[in-house]
Length: 123
Image 1 (cartoon, rainbow, N blue to C red):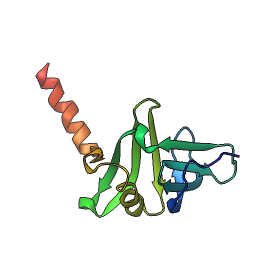
Image 2: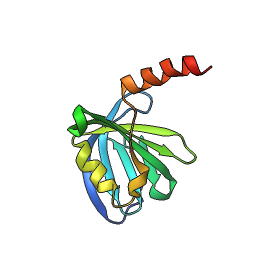
Image 3: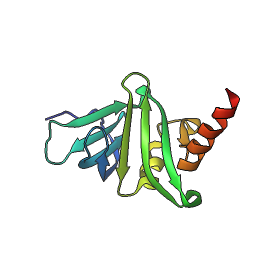
Image 4: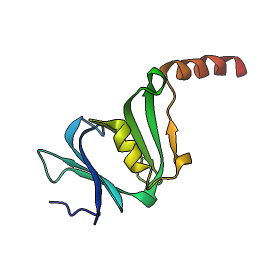
């Protein structure tokens, strides 16, 4: 069983990790790290210290009314995608530990298509 890096926990919420196959568990946001623990396999966990997070991108839909999921981009270990029961509440809890300019809005599907279409004419 993994030992938590946090000494103070701000939020614990049910979540889904999209790293590989979808796994269900709980996200813990505390004073030292973002942590995900699988509910069925305690040996399957993700711990990301706050100083290792480069930025967080949220998939915002319907003009900011709903956040479908968010991705954490780390400095060394790659990207991790998550969705929690209340993504807005989760991102607000993370805002205490991550600077405001590192919380960004990800591109929508149409923005990605538009960029791809415009890049055809720039070549």
